[in-house]
Image (tube, rainbow over all chains, first blue to last red):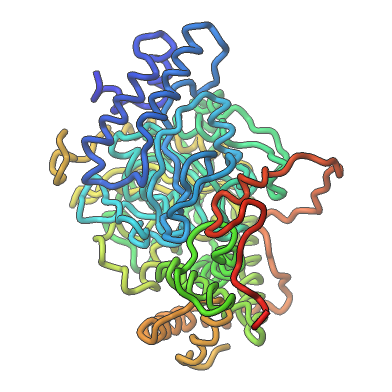
Length: 496
Length: 99
């Protein structure tokens, strides 16, 4: 029973829970046992409070037994990226700076999960402060890809992606600033979605680049991702960039195919540098849409080739300002030795931050400094508008844009860590969605010849999540990609 | 845009950002940051003369709310993560020399 529960998706688990076939404690225990069995090898979780998880699950069972009303995720375990605050739990951001931090309050999305009677399962690994594409910049551990332990699960939300992939959680939350949900989803062969900027409140998400950050769901199928998005989306006055627009019921319409669907294909996404297996799988996926009667049209995003350059000015600039708060005074680490106040700041930040965070803070400080502000920061914001205008024009022509998530499948741990620019270029297909604010989803579309997952990225116009999810579901149903589980028995320490 | 980035530039930026770096760090970061800035130079080829900067993907108007008093984080919760506090205040090193 236990291994079957960890192979079961969120919606099916809810049915089992509702009919009383299993209890919430059964479901929680099965996932905790799975974590115990395989996470020694995957290292997706930074912390799991087993007693608390079982107590929360028992409370949901009690409510069900006494006939109290239950939320829509009653008893479902959800793993949480360790940069989303949950009262009483750590939020280390995988940084020495916040190693001892305990959140005094709940993020908006956590409040929503609690109200839905979900069970918060544990805190997942990430690149430090979500800055990275591999989980290697975590100050604590490099998460491993469940499909190949030598390879990265992607990042920054690599812990959440690996946890869902390896059956340690049916659902997880991540955050996406330049591809940090979609790229690890692609590397691990799960579904990951970045909603429209403003669709989900950022209240309680530790800020990296505030004009780009967005929280989103991970799941093993589109339906489950739609369910989790439905729970977390919606207006929150505590985030002034949260948009006050009704949230449709994504699940109600999910299985209705879109008639006359127009799919845009961007030639710039299929150029030099794209792995041939990735290209083949993505073209196959586009053929599936063709077979379903969709019209495939070429659209151009001529400024997208500048997205990495724009991003690595805009995101570090915002980060350099956001991370000024880590000053050794209000929370977190303070260096033991220093000479006066200014030196206390510098010594604290020098010892508390890792290399990638330091690089980005310096890049941002440089781009915002006197004499360079117009040449770098303002210039990047102008090109950002051109990137957005390209999308606006494209979405006049097509409903959804389809293409690869990343140029290549999961890379080896250590392969790119000494070459930051090469690492950044991994995000070349995902970053523009953040700059333009449009929603994007990564869904599995097969494997390379070396058995690594490949992701299909779909993007839609702002607040068109319903259309995006329906389009994703059309592919998922038609392609009927056989469900394959990673060969975890092969992992050192893996016992299943 | 930038001439070749020097180690002195990196030291200056690290100081502005309040980051204490070793000489080794400065050397390594200088090369890496120079690579990134060289890559960013490609933005120069884009004509943006008639383009307004886009600061936010969703261009919002001011969001206003009624000015109603409400509870804030309790003091002990706000102080609970501080590296040094005395129960009422955050403690910092002396700010004035010889004060």
